[in-house]
Image (cartoon, rainbow, N blue to C red):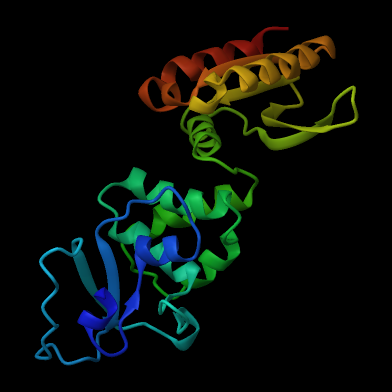
Length: 243
């Protein structure tokens, strides 16, 4: 309905298109639609129904064929959808969320988003998106891991190896959030899912296995990396300087 009201050539865009591509956990409103800047500004949009969710229509002078998916519903490519959503987001954090969600859910590769971003050197939040894509390409798979890497840069700490795998006693492959091999230091960043009883038990068993092998482990709630990064940095420094 929003596409029909926006007129010929209109496409779902931003968070709405990303959701249509299968990315979950994004806001459902406003419905975001894009049209070519070549369309006359005097061409009036159809009146949206009063009971329709809020709709925002954006114009773009750069809308190449490879960014236009003409299936049902017509929408921008996922790489383009993600950078538009990040540019249009109300806050930097919201921009982080949409990019990380699309990559973490394996819907798109950082390189695909990068190719779309390269066409927009002056887009809003270009530096933020470029840095975030570099972190994702470097192995980060969640916002908490991205926050940890940025904290290390801010406090001039060595960068960790992300998502290093280990094989447990049962032969199963396990992944460490962050690991500093020179210090034999492992850091786990706990999100809300770690409070689940079954997940908590699995975390404890994995943590015990790390300790048994002689590594040290520090754990932090994801929220602390943003609310009190200096406290996290202080403990990381202490662990790295303690024999």
